[in-house]
Image (cartoon, rainbow, N blue to C red; front, side, top):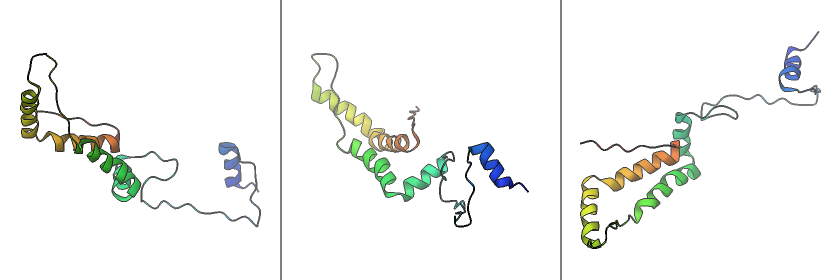
Length: 122
């Protein structure tokens, strides 16, 4: 009689070895704790990893916060404009828009999910 499992393994995967009586077969069980090997990674799997895995958390959150911790200064393109006044005016607008928190959150989403968008409405 033909073993269906061995026949499928030969046809689908090119596996030609026959397990002997001394070999042990490890059963793979889906744990539900993220994506298994070879499965597509969903947003839920990414969220799980970012919240639970220390390395993923550091890569996503720590780097995103570190980028905007020192903030930045804006310089005018035209000559003859006072740089300090121009920077102060821009920083006031950015402060009113809560830009630092918004940009940091956008950087977190971009690092975690690969894309991000910031929409400003009036």
